[in-house]
Image: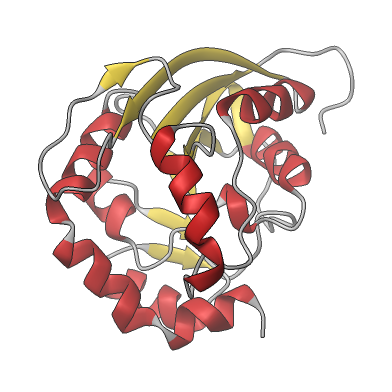
Length: 214
C-alpha cells in the first residue's frame, strides 16, 4: 500500500487529529505565518486536506491522494495531482513553496527540494516545517512511530540534516522558528531558531547560481 492510500483510507482519523489538537495546530500555523512572505504567490507541496493552505491563504497545492485532494478542493484549494519528486509545474512560477511535515514521506527528499528550487522565482523562498527528530518530543515520535498508522514508514530528519539537504539543493538558510514543546492542546510559545520544539520551520532562499538550474 502506498502512502497516498494510507492517508486516503484514514482521512477521517487524519482530520480528527486536527480538531482534537486545534490549539497545537493554531500554534503551528502562527509559527509558519512568521516566516511566510507577504503578498506573494505561493504553493504548498503535500497540501493534504488543505488545512494549512486554507488557514495561510495559499490557493494552490500539490497532493497525490485523490481523497485528500477532494477534501482540499472543498476548502477552496486548487489542487495538482503529483508527487514532490516530479512536479508538472513550469520553471519560476511561484514566489514561495511551503512543505508541512511531508519531508518524512518523500522517496527522494533532495530531488523534492530541487523541484521546489526549479519552480521558484529568483530570490524565492522554500519554507519547510518538519518534525525535528533531535528534540525531546522528536525522540518520542521516533520511538513510537512503528505503532502510528501515518508515521510507521516515515523517516524523520533533524534540523542539521534538513539544512544540509537544503544547501545541497542550492538554498541559503535565512530564518528559523520552532514551537510545540509538549503535547498539551494549548497555545504554545513560538521561539526563534530550532532545537527545542518538535515543530521546526526553516526558511531558505533560492540562491543565484551560474550553473544551469536544477
